[in-house]
Length: 246
Image 1 (tube, rainbow, N blue to C red):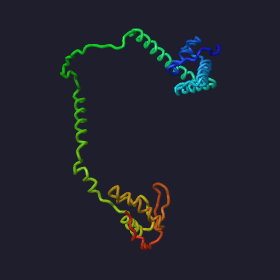
Image 2 (cartoon, rainbow, N blue to C red):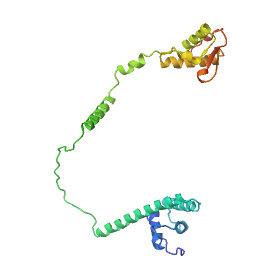
Image 3 (cartoon, rainbow, N blue to C red):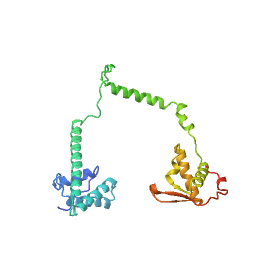
Image 4 (cartoon, helix red, strand yellow):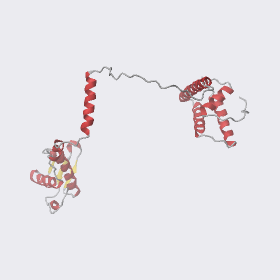
């Protein structure tokens, strides 16, 4: 392909420049020779920079895109390059068609600065004529009701389950676990400590109590899974029970 020797023109964007190069050098838009196109495109962008012309970021972004397609085309497996070329071809065809249509509209409107039409009154029939399934109407009704209810303060019954729930303290479970192990035997299955739990708060407090006792070296936890045991290490509770846990 011959060297670019034309005067630098101003293009609306990178697609405009690509179509110009394809047309000027009679390239096949449906099978773009990407190596040739990259060379011509980057050469033009360099000339724009040398002439101190404003180079929009879109031109540089397209240059990077073309270089990337060229790079992946050099790989032994170049399916990605083919897909990228098809994508670029589709964009070019779409841009070309839009530009042709814009030119046709421009020719049809030559000599007209504006189009004016007298206002006309339009008679509208306010009668609703669409048909809906009963289930669709029900969903619309429930949605509207739900939006209205979400704006209201929650009823007292909504808090009853929270207020009525007994909060089990970690301190009480520490004492309970310690005296249970002391009374029933110094070694018990870890799971057995949760057998009498009545609520989630009870379960959490039991688990935290075991951690506190293990941390204080009052008991030892050993094993894995269902075979995990807890063993009381000392019967001297001391002033451990006087500490406060939330």
